[in-house]
Length: 368
View 1 (cartoon, rainbow, N blue to C red):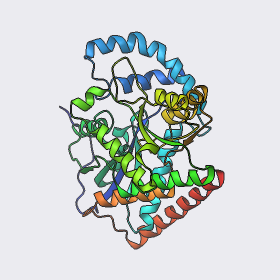
View 2 (view 1 turned 90 degrees about the vertical axis):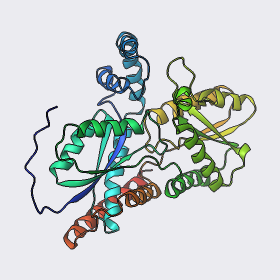
View 3 (view 1 turned 90 degrees about the horizontal axis):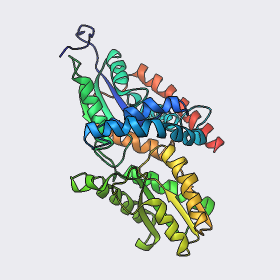
View 4 (view 1 turned 180 degrees about the horizontal axis):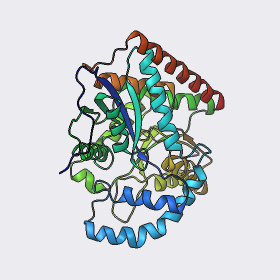
């Protein structure tokens, strides 16, 4: 194995600490041409699809890429913003706000964001941090609940990159935070704010991204962590067991996935006479195709078509102040013992970043 070229080691350099917020990824544009390479990279990940490689290659290149790219592009077009993909826009803003919040608390950390699939890629961001002199790096996946299909895929990308690096920084990895008090509190505040503005529903549906059922039997803790998140959130909201439901969305293929499935559950509720439903997606920290198109558009249509009267989608945590604060808590918990305290000069820079973050937060509040 050959290592990538890197600068000579510099003695006496003050170590820097960085945080990398890693999300799933997004195509560069809502077009079939942009979707093909994105879907190819995503669906070629052996963590995501565990079908025998030769068989899956034929299915992916013979059926999925030729047929699904155009359909997916049309769906992306319905949610695309003038600033680009919602997932990328939200993740980038979260990283900026997180750095500002940490700076307000006197911690000098460089915060960057990366995507498992698409750009900015994990290797490119890690190389940039190395060039900046970062000797301690915390990897923070944007997935509260651990799954081999998501969190482990992030870790794979990090480990694969450093196989080619001679001088590897000190690494820490955040596995999950599905039951972190700050995360649960941020979800609670989001729901209560929605209820204050729109009234309470007959049922609150908590929809998580689905995974094949076999992952549960093979030892993946994702299913259990989703239910723990739901239970903790319901407790904070004072909900009885008959006032909320847990479902799983985004099923792909013919194999059995975690149940109950979101769309059929909503149709069943409507037919049972449940008039008003609110739906939140706790497993997504940024709004994306799976929340804005699959839930806010398609799921709403399914519920109303089945006889429901009112369907409200509660937005993801995105740039909410409570969520940015929770991320800061998680980061500080996992960077304990690393050099993060700001010098006077660095603190001034961090305060400036914090002021920019507050201005951006106020602007977003004015817009919404």
